[in-house]
Image (cartoon, rainbow, N blue to C red; front, side, top):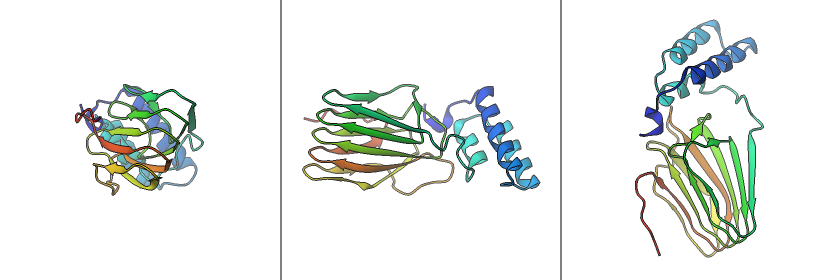
Length: 181
């Protein structure tokens, strides 16, 4: 099921309501904006409905940065894992697979920074998400992005930066698994 169609829990709604209320107390929202955003959050049934309620508000976890390192093993994340706002990955001899199709993403935009010497990376996005890989470069590989690059309101947007010296970066939607040799 696409991420923007996943039903939200009462806990998800409560976290968004607290974030909206905090923004109001900090003077970031007018009382009219507060009412509008609270109504949107409280009536949301899917993740896609919740994202516009917090659009333009500062992240609660502005320092939500996770760094993963590997010398010779593969780094893989799949299923319902929690995605930080910034994910930094370093690997000397291993590949990276990041499947965001079922992941829990609390931000409208995330950044993935790759530093790979001898390995490739695959990033799998939920349907409707977008990605910009203009900040990623490779010397002996390729950057292949099979999803739209321009951010869309209410949809997840992923910025991919970094360097893959002897590797390839692939960004695609879920459900298109193909083995390549």
